[in-house]
Length: 243
Image (tube, rainbow, N blue to C red):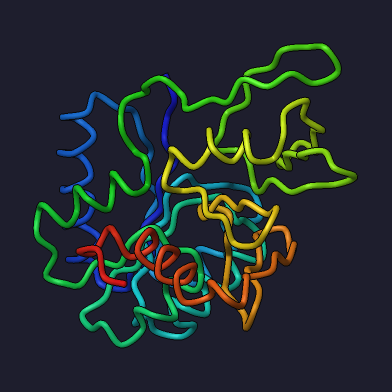
């Protein structure tokens, strides 16, 4: 069974203790193993990152010294994969928080339902059947975990699937691949012949989406409003479906 590595970065001990209690209750109900590491400052947390990686990080925005947003920016320069949840007493930094590809934004005092939603957004839950895409590459049939797909595009009339492990030229058309993948709302047709996995978008800058690895994907000008609405609906869905 996977042991989740979870960190809380908060300069207030009562808030760290509250999170530890909520986390213990949630993980016990789900039957999941975890290890919790607590840090009083962003500087201490970043020092720990030299030797450790975390699945989930709870980050207070108003830290003494380096702020939570500054710490998160440093975190994202090192690790784009961990799930980031901001903790704060104000919504002032919400937009900036989500630009850092955060999974949730919890406003103190945090209710039980909001905490559970944050954990679900971080996909901290019992293992279930993985969402896969069956493809044929070079005559070989492969099952690809769709969560690992960063984007799909067209190169030399062939659909190409891009993952962190590399790129695969598919034997099916782009439209066929897109039709299958768009059954899952995490996939967004952002331009003609370009399908992006929203989970891998680190930021939206002007007319482009920027992925965690630095790849820039264009946003279709004529559909820009529709595309950004769909993107925001997915990103903000965990806090009431705001667009």
